Image (cartoon, rainbow, N blue to C red; front, side, top):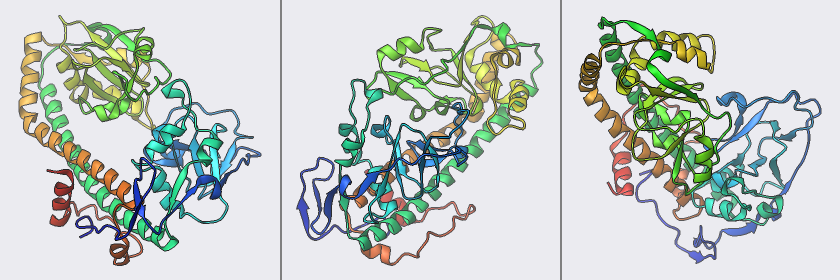
Length: 449
């Protein structure tokens, strides 16, 4: 019954907030400035752990990410934060670039750090509230600037923001419930992700077997390309309603473009980021860092620019088909170079010469078409299961987003159910990958399936 038939509060009151039009009558609404204050404490030697703010994960150690941003010669004089401090990337607050820290460490001088006068808000509840889908409205209207990609959240604007303040015991119940709910949803997503990984391994094995059986000459990749184009070594701005797309490394996975890993931008940025070359249908995008060695054919229907750490391959059509090259990257000779690029490295990296020197087999075009048809026929069932499983993961993520937003804004009452839960979620058993019927039925009902 964890996700089904959650009761609503018996006594609600209207509230003049677009993101919380009604809340439980006994909850309070307070401006952030009555609860917290900005703090600006600087590192003396710059030797503390480096932290960063992730839009997907909140405040985390930089060592826990695969970011390749340069490091300063010294971090002396940079800001410090402590556990329970709220950290806001002032230029990315509107994009969920904020969270409550769990670690002591160094953050950017451009970040805002805020500390409660007293523990009026449970730090975990505060974290979930300000990162909830509903609260994004508040963050967006309070971030100011001319360009969407450069909107800034100032101290004054943040401290004037309204926050929902349930009683302390209720905050604890909300946190406890969400800890268990998130653990259960994470377990489901992990199981489905493992299935996708296994199916992709099966597909790679099919490709490897097929390419091993080919009797064809090999050539360096640069000889089958018209052009090999490096990306811009800076990040294109995110523009929420942009009609153009930036393909990050996260968008290139297992031979396909995953649009959830891409992001929109505007015409001006698209022009700037395609000066070297315009990605066109039939070109191949390749990731040369974090992660190394993913590839996909550029599809028709959208105008795209390269994100950081990617390269574009424009093929000589009379020599090699893009589908054949993508399959070969995952199962053919390029795997030798990819393995060398990642050996002994936690990130892995290809320079442009490494890519051009990769060897590929080059049979006649008719033979390439035969190989592609054979691999895709054998992989068809796996591809169907992968697509279905990816949709299920997306639905689980949507379910989580809606559940958290409803719980932290008092649209459902989880107190009674939280009282029945143990203090901490059960340890996830990796062998236990089956969801119970109650969860599946609840998911279907909530998402209208």
